[in-house]
Amino acid sequence: MIAVREIDHLVLRVTDAEAMLAFYRDVLGCPVERRQDEIGLIQLRAGRSLIDLVPIDGALGRAGGAAPGKEGRNLDHFCLRIDPFDEAGIRRRLNEHGIEAGPLASRYGAEGEGPSLYLADPEGNVVELKGPATAAPVGAPSTRAAATAGAPAAEVTIRLLGRSDAGVLDDVAADVFDHPVDRALTSEFLADPRHHLVVACAGTTVIGMASALHYVHPDKPAELWINEVGVAPAYRRRGVGTRLLEALFAHGRAIGCSEAWLGTENSNRAARRLYAKVRGREEAMVYVTFAIRDTERSTP
Image (cartoon, rainbow, N blue to C red; front, top):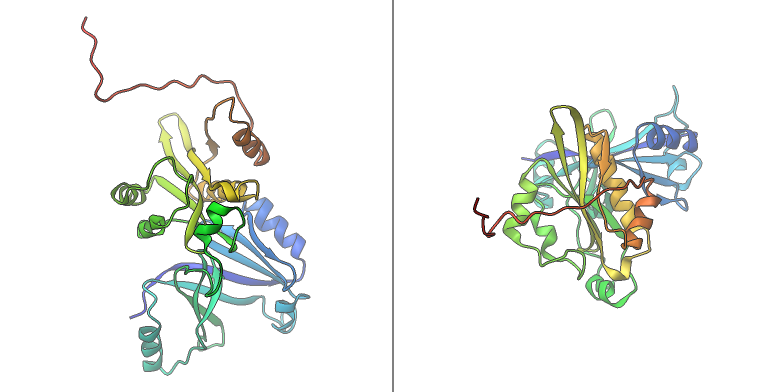
């Protein structure tokens, strides 16, 4: 059996890339996550999935034939995330039905680079079966070493973690979280549908994260409270924090939140610059904490 978890991405062939960008990015709120103009590929984050735009005058678009219209197709292919991804088992299942898949290759999807197979449905539509994000290519420098030494060694990918992704946090660069990650707390966090965690990965090493909680109130619509944002020192001032927040905002919109908010110290100028960059508006407030555990109760 092949277990489909969700649609990973779909790929649209487009004649007017800027108009399509304006629609998906500006109207629907899908931020650009990755752009490769040299081959003609723009990838936008749509919740847990991606929408890929392939201009027909680019390298990829020209390979797809005629422009979208009555005599040309506008869907290049769509991708299904398979979990678990067992290549041998998948091929056995396909062979039982007389379907042959292409060679295994590593391709970029909603979770990053990972194993991928192409095949065609009975009417010729191309379907991609995608596995989980994998390690950096063989021979690439250690991403953990890069995260502590200063120069990124692999492309940074952004992904929203699900309840089965606790293992992703087994490899985290220093200074991303305040304290060492606890596996039990991670599982509890990811199992709660109101908790959300977006991570930035270089290879298999987590080099950035942004966490949030969405909530409702009797007199207010759903809001997204951003709890923490952390990026490894070697990856700061490279746009990673911006991408993490944009991904959280996109996810917040997808689950119905109308507003996102957070708090930070007046003295944290780096954080304030980041939040201004993603269109944040500062408001005066007083930050108050209460110790509610292991404290002595006052007597009347």
